[in-house]
Length: 354
Image (tube, rainbow, N blue to C red; front, side):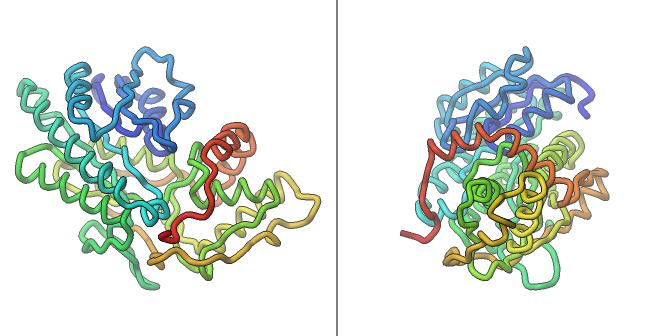
């Protein structure tokens, strides 16, 4: 994927998607990887434990809002590229406490962009031209779709939650640093990710964990909100592909072409768990419980990934069925990992704006 060894700075590399990127970079490329992570509640060294002893891997415990720390990391490690995944990402938390989303996703991104710009200006010409800043974002910046159509790279921005608004702002900053300062930026916007190591506050791990414990399976509203699901390793491979071959200044939408209503998804998870670990009390669909909807809950997201497929040849390897099966098996095999996190970071219902 990369024609020569490079040093890649990955922000948020101890989180869910970032750790998948770090693991793939170490396993499949000759790159040296610097993982910059603040280790908030959603980040853990356990997500990269399998590659942590590799001599090409370095961990830096720092916050992207800390300009001095970030500048020091650039100076020490001299990266050839930045993959920026560090972010506050849970919509419900953004409703209850939006300020940290603005601080991390907006201010933190501006600090990182400025550090990258200054670093690139110090590079020799042959490295300056090859430098890349890859800004990783979400389809939520586009707002909500009706029953038809899909988001493309030219869809207008219409963020509806504090999380989505903070990511939209960070997207605009990345493009501004490209157009104003010439920083070689590429942007990707992805659909809903799922898979191993996802923090157990998001829908799929919550449903798996509650179902195994015989607890209610919360479904917001009428359960008919639609999401386009993307297996995290497919997303990681798309990100590496864009970093290696994406055109500077371009945006690439990354989606799994796997639309399901939330209710359909929960029902599928129940059936998978029933097959793999039957519950003596009966089918787990009995646990589905409709709860008060999230304020401003977007009705439907869907990604048109024709650009990344056509230009760069990427396509997802997993269907929703195979990806969910892999995910459920991983959570069954790694029960100690997510149970520890749930005990340490136990929280009641989030996202009601209280």
